[in-house]
Structure formats: C-alpha cells, structure tokens
Length: 215
Image (cartoon, rainbow, N blue to C red; front, side):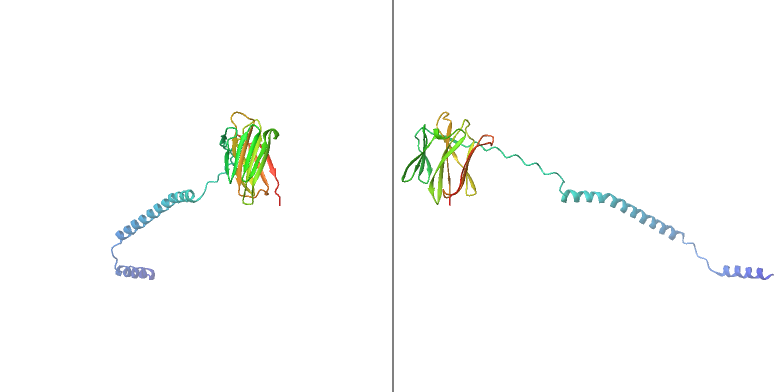
C-alpha cells in the first residue's frame, strides 16, 4: 500500500471507533417552536404599543390642554335699568331721611331742612337740557336735591362724590310737567367735589352738573 492509502485506512478505523448517538431532532424542533412563539409575542407587543400610544396622547391633551380660542369680544355696556319714578301730588311731602323732606309744586322743588327754612329750586329757572341742584348737610353727610328739565324722562340719575357713585331717586308731578326732581344722600361733606349725571333710556348722557370741591 502506498503511504496515502495507509493514512486513509487509519482515519477510517479511528472514525469507526467514535460512538455516534441519536440525532437530537426533537429537541431542535422544540427549541425552534419556542423561538417562534417568542417572536410572535414580541410582534404582538409592538403592535399593541403602536395602538395605545395615540390613545394615551389624546387623553392627555383632552385633560390638560385648553383649547386655543380667541377671547370673546367685550360686551357693550348695558343701558341703565329704568329708575323707579315716584309720582307725587303737588305739595306732598317726601321724606328724604336725616331730617330732610322734599315737596314739589308747579313752581319747582322745595327742600325742607332741619331747623331752617325751605330752599326753592325754581323749575322755570332751569334751562332745557340742564340741571340745577342744591345741597344740605354737614361733615357727616349731605343731601343732594335738584331738577332736570328736558323733553325726555330720564332713566336714571347718578351722583358721584368722593370717588363713589350712588343712584339718585326720581320724583315727579302727575302728567307731563316737562321736568323731574331727584334726590340722593352720600356720607360725604358737602364741600367735596361732586358730579350729577342724567342718563337716557339707552344709556346716553342727557346732562351733567359738576361742582368743584372746596377746601
């Protein structure tokens, strides 16, 4: 035999002497099935995550984010509510409080004061569309009373004094005398500056009367 043939024969004898077991087919197939199940589970988890993320984002926005809407335009100032007008008979006394009274006649407004004669505000002396007023009081408070003369019955009269505005009460005679009287009280000294404003039904300023303060 040649040297190559001798070597080949020796290799065959060595290979035949090595024990050969059964091929692990079942184990390999089991492992393959396990791997496939894990891959399917991972794909399902990825799909579920892809579906849940948008839903979670929507819930977050709905709960915490305010809608971006422009601010609503400011509503126009409403017209003043019509003031309750008291109709009195000529000469009927109207108590104003703090010892003061008011009565109306065809001549105008009489303001009664404690321990003093009445003050008369003549209606004929008030120009059309204007205000005339008088005051009575002391450092603890003041009564304002006056007349507005005009073709339109006012919807309201306000008195602003000392940084505060109060509504005056309107009093008139029966029929259409062409003027109305009003009165108000403020816990301020009569020497403080004041402004009386007469308002129409639509909020229009019909007349104003400003009185500067004194000392």
